[in-house]
Image (cartoon, rainbow, N blue to C red; front, side, top):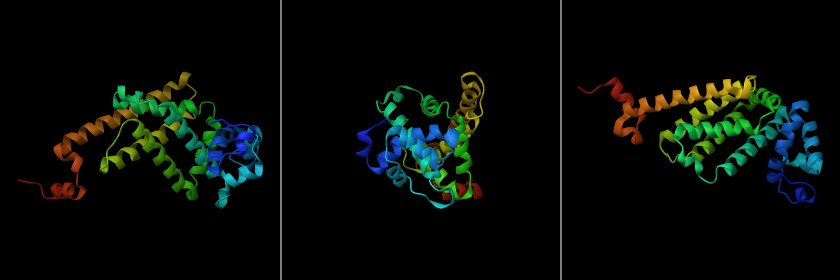
Length: 228
């Protein structure tokens, strides 16, 4: 979403957050996730700085930083959902759907490795970990939905937890990857997805027909009291 001039004044605060987020991320390479980055972004888009600050209220020791990072993540989510809204991912194998979605997100922030490094350092602070986990879960949920996942049982949660972990680890590799076309990151992502596919296959074989109605208590009970 790219709004300029008078149109900016018509945005709600939530819309303004998303509109400003990519420009804030760009400024964060030099100013960090700071009020200075917010001011530079507001100036670029022609937004009133006072209103921009209302869109990112200061919270706790990190001020507006975690809110700006959250908006950046949300802006990437929005770009991803718009890009794949046509359902074309349905023609691909599931592992390729996930790889395509993760790679799209990486390409969407290409050139902003320094901003990502600073963002991850802020997210790692103890007071920000819950917000960072929510961000990762939300993005993983959106990826799985675009990939066609409609599970509602325990698989719904395990898939998102695993993908959030894979995505976070891939981001950590990507931001420091100096190889041509990020080939090291690509190989890392492919290995992680392959590992998950093998795990899912083994899990399906273990649970058999009961995998869609899996009970943790019943499973643990069978481990403790195996049938004769």
